[in-house]
Length: 358
Figure 1 (cartoon, rainbow, N blue to C red):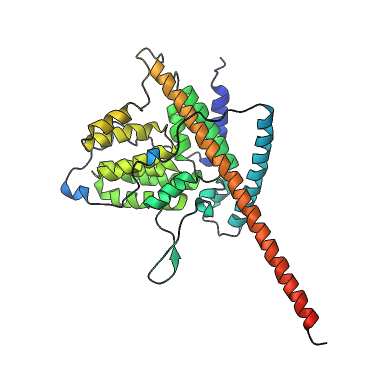
Figure 2 (figure 1 turned 30 degrees about the vertical axis):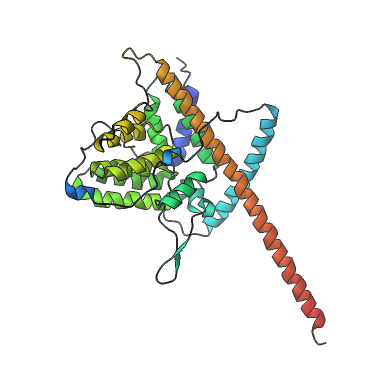
């Protein structure tokens, strides 16, 4: 019998085939009810790195996302695709001169987050060599949230599949596992395997938590906060370690990137409860994904949640699409400057030849 969700499932399967291998299994235990209880000893509350606070509200959320306006939209879409092709060609050219880490790199998306589009500021070490600050530094987090990496072709396909899954949540919990799979594999099979290893270490007990934390932080440093799942898994680990304040701030980063992340929405409620933050727990509890009725039917609150999530996802897509225009304009400006410099140098050389002794 034909299922109305079958086209979305086929598209989702195609996307996941690009970014996961057949032997990978997604772990979906982050902030699940069976998660390890937090450690509450004094040593567990040791101060860790500071993150930006209230990050969920850093992006504008008022008003509806812009809807397509018929014929003019097709022209905009074609122009954006042309700009995307130029940007991906630049990224591919840059990546082609770098040594490959493994054969799986051929299957990965051209992840633009690893290049200079995030506008990360530089600092100077005591030896005088420049280095970038941590991508969990408050200033860097704020900058990255306001400047998402441009949307690649595969990234656009993933986000479209994600929006389809969100829409199907209106009357079914079945798409939840598909969303976990998409979030887990957003940076390709190699990164997904590293994340899987870190998650297994997290679930292995306190003796493995230091190693798990190091792996998760390394993933965030490489890919940035716009791959939300390592940040979410780190928030879970901080909760398990009793470092509630850090966990809450990490949850806020996840929810600034994906306000519809039902795992982080449930997790931040648990964290607020651990902090005895009653008002915060109530506020976030109101934003969680409402359950279906016992008979499997939907509710008005569930419908409203899905509608809001779909609008938030569309806004995120539009912000990322605008970044394509911005970066192509930057490339054009750099090319014009380079061309002008080359012409000026050529003119200087010509003048020098005219003045040379014969």
